[in-house]
Image 1 (tube, rainbow, N blue to C red):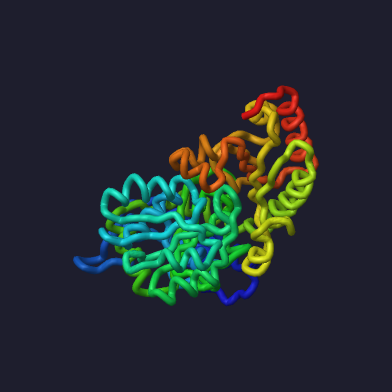
Image 2: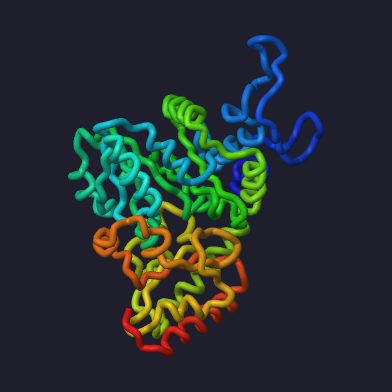
Length: 390
């Protein structure tokens, strides 16, 4: 690990830097599947790229340092990373999950791991009493997102960690929305941090990747075994792209967040908006906890249109902002959670937790904030032209 203290410097110089053999300032792309061995049973530290690759290892060392962990692991997607973590559990185990989590996380638990006998229970993790009451002998871990996707619900990570550890359970935190630039769950007591690195860490909508970070050596050994045995590893070229993306994370997140705060304040007072979800607003129920545990609110906003507005005309009216899956790229993106990112969650559960048909999720990019606002204003005006109640 580097000796630098500032995360801005670590983003650029952290982990394994450069190439000793040539002096290249960037870690090379070791685009190889296998490695020549000197003699039988003797190698240079590498045998096969599923088991270990220098480019991937540089990325894994970097994310470990940024999250203030000890061990990082890189996977082919955020869901591959989450799936690897869930492989830590066995038949008869139960995992508590937040009321609103990414639909893919719910789907893999509900459709894959449940068939293996791993149970889950949806809990309001913002209510510490309710959370603690839900912990029994079968529960082995609590899995949270904070802020959660898509309602930006904020969970007190430190408080949940204390409860989980009091009962001998693990705390897993998906830190995709915040990144280690804004929030470091391991320093707040989490045991495992998961990222869809496709999002802010990559930052340019040009790769798909997942990352896991832990501090505990035994957990690391188990996860390394799972990574190698199941094989969902990140390829060398994507590892290189992700390292490159991370170098600009600090400057990007500052602009993302600056733009998001401006847009959220504007949307809050807009005549066409009935509700806004953004922990950067003082009126948001998660504002105080968010301010305490993170350096900022991030750049994800969800909101609902007022009754009578045509949501389809809103989406069709956007010209700058793309209607697309994913988030965290330099460009602004908007999606319809109930039919896109969270469609795998049954309708009755979506309604119960507040993921309505009228909910819109906005990933605020780093474009000129006035032009983002103008695009939203035009789309909102289009939505108001036809009085259809969704």
